[in-house]
Every structure is written in C-alpha cells, then in structure tokens.
Image (cartoon, rainbow over all chains, first blue to last red):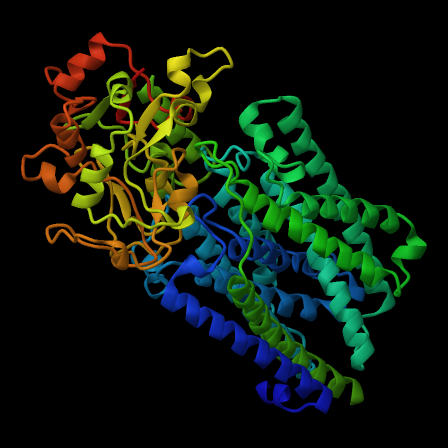
Length: 386
Length: 254
C-alpha cells in the first residue's frame, strides 16, 4: 500500500519537496542544539520549558481529538463521518509522532531517553505519558490499518477490531488527561495546580483538533477529488462550537477562582499573562489576541449560516487554532514559570533556532500525514472507480 | 498525623483503582519515598541573623562551587547555582507583609536544596535519576539524568539548575576529586555527600566556620543529642513554604 504515496502529481511532489526542505532546516537547527546544548533556545534558569513543551501539549490535544470523529462513527454508527474517520485517525498518528518528537527535542540528553524505559518510574507522570502516547499510537496504527485494509478488499472489518476501537476512545481521553496531570500535580506551580486543567485541556483539544481537521479536509476538497461530505463538515463545525463554548466557560471558571480568591501566588501568574508583572508583559499581546479570537470565533460559530459557509468556516477554524495554541500552549506552559518560585520575573521568548526546530518537527508531522492521506485517498478513489 | 496521611493516601490509591501495588504505593508515598523514620537524617540550620552580620560574605558559595566544580557562567539566564543568597521576602514569600521589620526586608538568606523529606523532584523524575538516599539526602545520578527538567518544574524552591551548555569552559580550577558535568543534565546541592562519606562536614558549613560567621549548622536530626536537634528544640526556626508539605531538612532562624 505504501507505494501509493510515491506516485503523485507535480503539485504533490512540490508540496513534498517543500516539506523536505523545512525538515532539513529543522535538522540543521537541531544539530546545532545537539552541539551547543539548549542554550540556543530562549529558555533560561527560570523558564525551563517553552516552545517545545507547548507544542507537545497542543499536539496531544490534536491527537486526542480524533475521538470526535471515531466516537460518533463507530459507537453511534454515524455514517456521514465514514470518509472523515480515516483522516482523523491518520491525523492522530502524525500528531502523536509529533508529540514524541517535541519531547525528544526538549531533552538535554536525548541519547539517554531510553532510560525512561530502562528505569520505569510509575511515580512520574512523564512515564505514564510516554506509555499512554505509545499505546495510543499503536492503537491508531492498528485500527486504521485493519479497517482500511478491509475497506480496500471490500470486506467487513474483522470482529475483533471493534473492542480495540472502543478501547481507543477512553484511551484518547487518557492521553490528554495524563498530559494535564503532568502540570496539575505540581505543588510548586500554583498556576497549574488546578483540577480544571484536565477538562480544560480536553475541551480545548476538541475545539482545536476538529478545527484543524476541517481546514485540512477543505484543502483536500480543493486540491484533490476527495469530498468529506457536507453533512460531516456541518457536524464537525457543530462539535467545534460546543467544545469552544465549554472551553471558554472552563477558562472563565478558572479565572474566577484564581482572581476572586485573590491569593497573590495565584493572581501573579494571571497578572503576568494579561497585564504584565514588574513592567514585563511579553505575553500579554498574545493572550489578548487569544481571548479576542476565541470570543469572536464563538460568536461567529453561533450563527449556523456562518458556521456552514465554507468561505468563512476555515477562517473561524484558523482563529480557534491560533487562540487555543496561545492559550494552552505558550500561555499555560510559560506562565507557570513566571514568576519563578522565588518571585523573580524572568521572561521567555522562543529563539529563532528553537523556532526552526519546531517548524522542522511540524514538517515531519505533515510529511507523515501527507503520505498517509495520499494512500488513503488513492485507495478510496480506486474503490470508487470500480 | 503523618501516618494517618499516608494511610489515607494509600487507601485513596486503592479506591481510585490504581491497584494495591506500584501505583498505589507511589501515590501513598507522594514524596518518592516515605518520610524518614530511622537512620541518619542530615539537616541544616541557617542562622540568618549571623549571616546578615557578615553582609557581602560569599564564603559558603565560593567553597561549595569550587568543591563541586560548579561553573561560573556570566549570563544570568544560564547560571548554575548550588547555594546562594536571596533576600528574605524571596526566600519566604509567605512570611512577608508590608510592615515587616526593616532588618528582615533586606536580610540575605542563603538558599540551597532543602533535601525535603517528601521531595517533589524525586516524585516526578521519570528515570529515578534523582532520589533520596538512606541519610535523607536528595541526590542526582548525573549519568542517568535525561535532562527533561521535570524536577525543575516540580521544585518549589528554585533550587535546581540545568546545564544549558557545556559547563567545563567555565571552570577555572577543576577539582579532581569531584566530577565535572556535561551539558544537558540537572544539578544541585548534594549536602556534600562525598565529604560526609569521609567524615567531613559540608564545604559551605566549613567555610562559614572559617569565615568566623558560624551561621550554618549541620548535623543528624535522628540523633536527639546532636547539636542541630538541640538547637531546633530550643530555638524558633522556620522552613521554606511549609504549607506544601515537602518537609525541608533545612531550617532557618530569623
């Protein structure tokens, strides 16, 4: 089946070449980081996690959000997602691989990363995160392979795959739960020490992941013969509407507890995020942008006519992705470290090397996604032609 | 009360379906290992009044950083520190109010790893590279550390440093009896376990005595007759962020 990814139009190969170039640039930057250490990033003594871990957090959400097409299709037999579901699973596969890569590039000693397996430490949420991500990757590879092969051979998928698919649903929830637990279990960081973090992560994932899926499938429709189906797009945009509403509600709930209680060590982080502390307010413009985009998208989504308009919808989805990316990626991760445990305010801005590595990882993810989707769509076209 | 807490967490672990074995035990200990009940328990008492009396003194930092090959990195963003001074309001953010006495507001407080009895850094380490030894010392196997910096996120005291770059070019006087580090690993105060093994007191404490300051006192908390135990019984001391339940082994007289 893999050979399907190797035959394509000039446009396909141009896209692949662009990705390969991006990946090469990423490798170059990563090579520099390997030689010089993480000093080439914008990270510092006080803010020790940044862009990489923020991307990781965001992409776990995208990976988990595949459940938003898997669940209606397999559990409720919602047929209109029939064409979308394989796209969602492939997106999950590439997103999980990106998550792993983002963790990997963040390691100070990447050659030792196998120590996590050699010395399994159930105390550590990072151990569980690795386990759940690997399990999720395995599940999605298995499911999409089995279901897709049956579809190609035009036979019904084997019965044993059904429980595996059902298992993948709570598993999707688990990967993002564990990711939130990474943060919310730390007494040192009052900003993250909140039970709403898990639901918040899930809600924002289910808003941003399907948004990405909508944009990508509209692009596919434009450039290929693939049509996700009107009904599927409608339903997905409705899912986004609900998830975004819930996410905004959760953020508001968090803000209420943080601000109304007025406990300085809680307030300080929000203060830094939205107005700045000690004259340092580097993230404030991004945070306000995130809030504005979120609210604006929500208002637009509430009008079915706009939500179902395919000229407007991709922009709304883009706005949501940017908003969530800022809110739970950069904002959440970085603000946990500002102020630091001693009350010092040190800011963080990603360096250009760090950004190059990040874009390189996205390049790898999109290359994998392109390959997988190419195979899926080619086979689908062949079946349709029969 | 301590025992009650651990029993409760153990029970909670089972009820949450985490099973009776590893995860439940992990949840129950919530500090990596149970609170020390027997054996040596090294601890330090810092008399901040005496320390303040010698303002500008850097004897402890100098001695420690020399003994452990801690690099002197000029840019603050990438500094590595084992023991250093912070102002009282930074070291004790929960103990500050606008009407605090003048001498406290500007008081220099030596800060270092607290060698917590329930260390969050040990709890989160994904490779057990950081662990608590039988003498209550929280230490790091720098050959096992993968440099994920989860421990830094977990430390409520900012006591851990990461080697953002190769530290060796920043060492003037390399001590051959203590290893240097590579880039990409985390490090921090180790209560001079290598010196304790030889029957010596920590380098900072020794330097403080030599500097005729005597602000640092070190000893075994499990021995009720040790000097630290006696001092703790007779003097009012505080620990940093006691509300977090980490139970530091470094005590402060203010």
